[in-house]
Length: 155
Image (cartoon, rainbow, N blue to C red):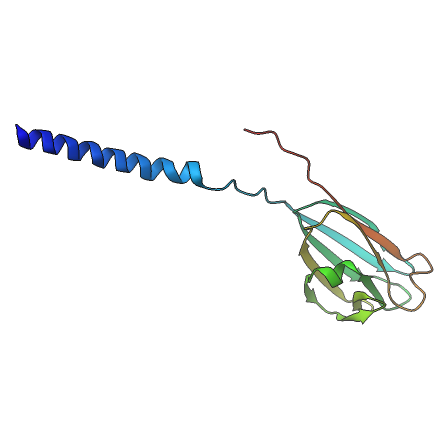
């Protein structure tokens, strides 16, 4: 009889430990951060314009900017922004890069393409220009607008 009581207590402890092991991580784990979605934009660079020139994403989104230099007059083009001094985009393709006028630029020769990828971690409006000669002053400008993601209702 004593043995049954001991086995009953041990069995109860085992069940209690299993419940604690299963429930405790759920109760104590931090809330998962909402991850943004992946937004891909194809941007054509031609004489004195970016198409499209305004990009709007939510904070937390992974942004992929696919640039192509489609200029029929065979001019070089670039994107230059102070944003790229604050974040380091992953860059792939055929381009050259550098810093000028406190902006990091990525430049492509005629017919070339490149891609920039980054996470929009900060809300705000981030202007960019073509840093080649007078292209920016002729209107080859744009902006990346990062808006705070809308609050999602609790489940």
